[in-house]
Image (cartoon, rainbow, N blue to C red; front, side):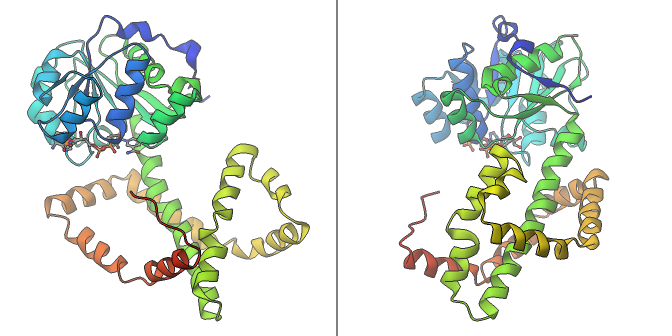
Length: 332
Ligand code: NDP
């Protein structure tokens, strides 16, 4: 039975006599630091001397170099990009960990796929938000919280779960629910969404746009119909709020009849096989090895693919549509 932890399972006081440090002050680092502080645990921020450090200080946090923070703290939350994490950990944190310290990751990726092997005498836990950093902060401030996956990879002190849940409570996720998973399961699910569900869905979007444009509909009309009106995003939001089938009742009878009769045509067994193939590459570690090799080679394939995507006409279709409907893209 899958375990989900809530507020009553956690006790943030576990962190009151520990020095908590956060390495990194980016998307997750800043949001989690602010939430923790509002929950009564003020972390030390381990960050390089640059504008990011200045921002942490403007926000009122004490800062230190990464190695210094690792030295001073006994609970270390590592919130830097996954690509640099093994090297930064090995160079600036590993040697400063003491027996019984705890390290916390926001994804199981590096540990699960063997890129980072923590020392055996520390607790190793995961609190992995299912939410971008801004959402981690906004939902905390609103009071609702956000879902996450949590887990203990290594329990050196018999207290690893308590530390894990205290961090989860401190950043606000036990308000919504923190579901227990292994590091590998969390990383695999995350990669599957990125590599299976997301791109498969993207292809359906693209094929639909192309079908309409090939049939002679104006590009602006196709873009608004399928994507940019926000109607589809609204339906997805309703699926989240009231359920997949229940949200169908918000659509007309014509819509329900048409989508259910035609929907069956898109039950394509090959799709399942393709998704299963993607999942297998993930769980076997093939993807992680491929991605590490790509990084070591200086990202040649990533650069090529980024170049190729600029050639797709969707950017021009979008530009025309945004002009037509006076939709200014937000600054990102
Ligand atoms: P960011 O890219 O936002 O991290 C930026 C921070 O990392 C900055 O403080 C930056 O410092 C620091 N950093 C980058 N490179 C180095 C380095 N070589 N040495 C020291 N510090 C460095 O990361 P995220 O917040 O997006 O991700 C952090 C973790 O959270 C990852 O494990 C990720 O998988 C996980 N996660 C992320 C989610 C998200 O929505 N982004 C969702 C759930 C989990 P500087 O500015 O000085 O370069």
